[in-house]
Image (cartoon, rainbow, N blue to C red; front, side):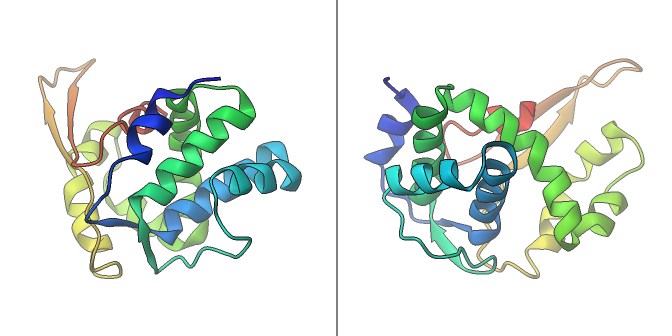
Length: 163
């Protein structure tokens, strides 16, 4: 099965990296929903060694993209679907591994939370100094809707926000 995101990003070299916390969360999601054997298949397809990710260590962006691409192939889902599912899991995961209070402090309502994402990432940068997070802007806010603008130097990750 073809996988455009996987093929597209495998050839790109990135200057920044994603912290192991992201890759550990991908691993946690796969193990929780599909089991250890499926994680082993995905890890192997991505060409990664059988060793744990270190939360505070920076990994090449390619590692995360390769995991998404391998999961897409092994699970028979699009990369976008994988990223959406990961987006749903990410907030729960980060709250469970010690960032719950930070998430709560970002806002009591969804619009307030979304408006404070950049400030929250600034706080996270204190622990992860090489963090290169996306940027967000809320526009066209009404009582029933808003538009969230997402800016990132990493292509193809917008579906994560949908989750």
